Image (cartoon, rainbow, N blue to C red; front, side, top):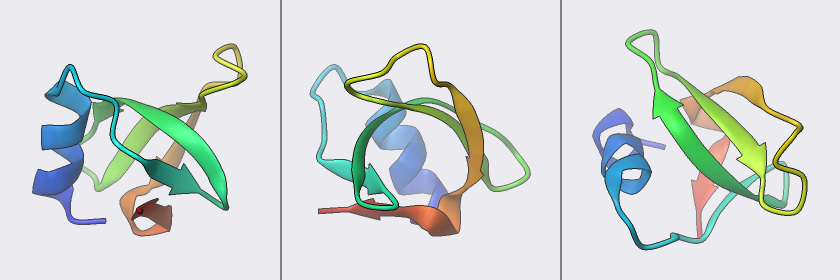
Length: 58
C-alpha cells in the first residue's frame, strides 16, 4: 500500500476495507519507515507493526 494512502485511511473516520494476510484490519498509525501499527477488526488486542507493502485495500 502507498504510504500516503495508508495515512489518509488511518486519519479517516470512515472504516476502509483494508486487509493484512486476508484479515480485515484497522490502521492505527503509519510510521516514517514504511510500516504501520494495525490490529484485526475482530481482535483489537492483537496489535502489530507490519510493512505497508503487506497491506491491501480492497
